[in-house]
Length: 264
Image (tube, rainbow, N blue to C red; front, side, top):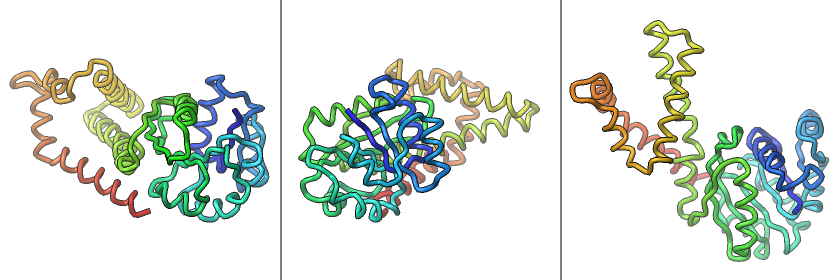
């Protein structure tokens, strides 16, 4: 299988590295395009794959084409490539707000489309991706693309109605987590801990806590209760977080994120 990327920013670079490291596809089976000479040089030297001068060159080469440009450039890119797409090719998108219907109207009604939403932890092969397909994509083709995407994290098939929810709960949520880590580290620094050490303590605590949720199968509330001893330090911190509206702030932020995604 030959894979192409139109666009090679941070997300595409993380995805390409994960795919190459998995060994499922060789460098000779991959190609990527970019607008700038500097990025094309990075594609060749850092990633070791072919650097296309045009987006059409990617389409002419690949069996699976990832549209990895920002949402505002989708119209422009689609107009460039739509006449060169073949019926046996699969187009994979990673942009919020661009529905299967919207994409089909612009790419053509006979084009196989898989809509996905990845996130930046793909950079460390711990990404989380939601994906859905149009009726032209076979289950086998969807599974093949899913396996490719699992080179850089986890992937799950969801109804298209939930793709915008995926944006809120995983696509954008690393930013919320980074803010939480930064805030915890700031508090530790205020109490005398060196900043580099504070980031390490905070980040490892978040990593370990997330792993407990995934590996124990316990409800997050149960795990929280396990830390909260009667009259202890943790329940006092939890009391303040509840007083300050932490849960409500996170819920409202995520809902605003989903709303924005649907409007794009």
